[in-house]
Length: 237
Image 1 (cartoon, helix red, strand yellow):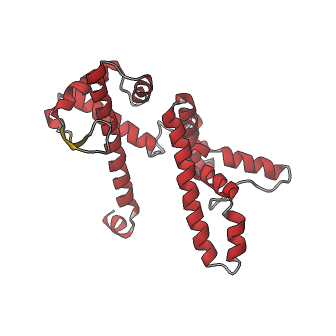
Image 2: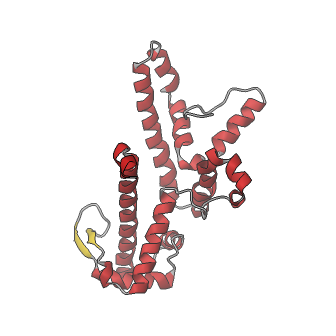
Image 3: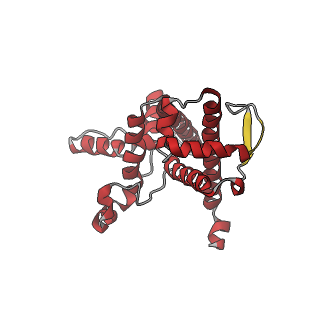
């Protein structure tokens, strides 16, 4: 394990990604606590999102009452002008601390999609399904965890999730095409073909968690009827 950690940056990057996501979730809950203290109510959108983390009214009240133990520092990047420096969970009552940790863990595993048993499609509990779809497990999980979930939420956060993923993945694809073109004899033709807005939009959609199985189903259908595939911005067909 030590050798693999030292030889690969992936465990390090995964740890940092988990840490930043968990921190963001904690700040989101803290900002909601500040709004609640000022207005005595929680917005419908915030309530629905927090409920997905297992935080309903009772749990939220317990957590909100314990955020007074957290250390904060001034910040211009957060809604309430404060950034959490330390939660000091050792000062929280045991139930509230457990509820908060469980919510942050659940949110981190959801937003950074983890292929856990609880996230899988129901048919993936069978060993034959796990064998047949082992290389498509991530995409199958994304169908419910990402695509259907955000459609169900139908709020501004879901819209931002979709548009930002398409934009950033499209930019990443553009950088990849430019690098590949610099190493090819037909670099100019390659760029003309794959750096169009339509090609980058397709690549941005396909590489986002939202797309799930849609590109696979689309391309399989097109091939079946003798048409060229629409999506071609990933390593596998």
